[in-house]
View 1 (cartoon, helix red, strand yellow):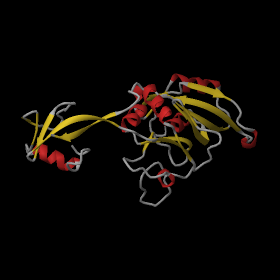
View 2 (view 1 turned 90 degrees about the horizontal axis):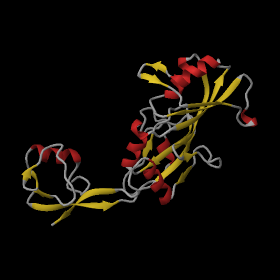
View 3 (view 1 turned 90 degrees about the vertical axis):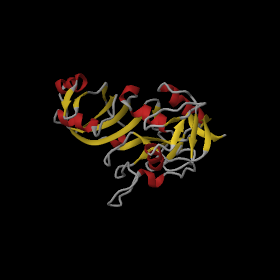
View 4 (view 1 turned 120 degrees about the vertical axis):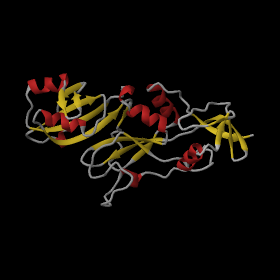
Length: 252
């Protein structure tokens, strides 16, 4: 009802609580579900629930260190949303946050259903990070990180871990590069996993989120919009229908 322009969500809830809304002739209650074809009576008018195909936008953003993944900051620090193009219908939703000191791939969309599915652990969407670690980590500790270590919010682990050098221009003596993969996305999970074995993270960069890779040509602070085909692939990859259908109301 709110999407159809009949009032703000909170105001609609107040009308429901006051018994002013009926669904198929019965007084509506909070939490009641309505499906395509149902009839809703409100303020002397009748409406039919209809499905409407929705077009969404999705983009990838190369987040630099020092930016926050938040819409507003009391300290007026830079946020990722400062560099994004405006959208006419909806708003950008960040699919998984990156903390202020972490750089790399951020996927943003106006498709709330897609965002929720990609962020939920049940979606099994993996995230890949490039880590620069000060000093060396023992083989025993690397195995611990793969088997699982206890964090304050439960056991966590890397689903994959590869040791290797990065590009020559970023080589730093006394540091080792690792590529790691996680299947969840808890707050600062990658950093906390390394800290759990006494390792110190010098740099952290996300380079992949599910099937989306950070393009080498995309510089920090730049964004690139995905095409409609790529958006459909993202939805299908997490078990959603390729084209979202949202419920709205038609006056009858």
